[in-house]
Image 1 (cartoon, rainbow, N blue to C red):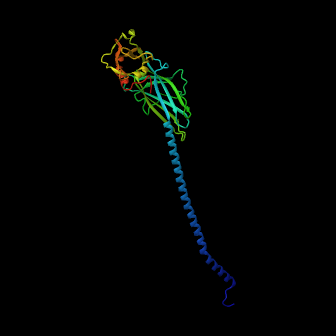
Image 2: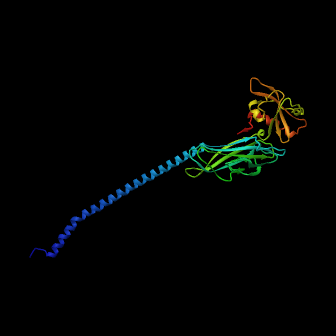
Image 3: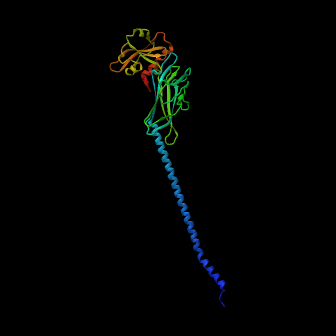
Length: 335
């Protein structure tokens, strides 16, 4: 037994040798698993970044498509106001009235839900001596699809400004199918004869995002649309005898086609020398007496006439009325 280790000790040494041989392999396996986990983590991060990028691109694409759709809808929604003389807008000696035809047309391919209309008014001339008082209400016999007003109050110089409160707005929303039109006929009354500036807006939620969209239109109301127009034949001596030329008033050329509508010339009558195109201002009368009809152009040269002793306030309207006829002759019904 000399030179040999005890059995117990020999076994322990062998096991120790085996443990020493396998330790490096185990470390390699752990390192391999760690590397694989790190690779998977990096791959997941790359995938996450790609997914987030794709989601952001999709969101931007959706936002761009919504904006394009909103712009298409806004461009396809038409809103307008037409000032016109009508039986729904009678005049009296204490004020001036005009009919306002309000229209909304949905030319877009999508329906509009809960659209609201707002209207603003302001005097075109600033710093007037007295504020203009106005009233607006729907015409009595109007089968209206737009529930406007009623409303009343003073018209300020900045009444059409972007921060100003609307003079009148709808009391309930308007639903418009694709291609549908909604209309309302209202009567605007003012206590002073002044040109007015107007602004109309229709607001509705976006079909895509639900955000509020707005379509606006600006318009004007002329003096000639707040007064009455009538025609006096040249042979009506009793009606024209009391009319005398207005001192200092320059002659004005009147376009005959528009004059027939504006001054209610009967279809059977012609506009010739001596007839009078009359403008009723409250209880007074201004007139355009035809002096010459031009054969080479559809116009007539007229002189201003009024009753003898007409009030200065009435005569002060002559240059402003002449300017409307000369620059922008408004029809009896027009935007």
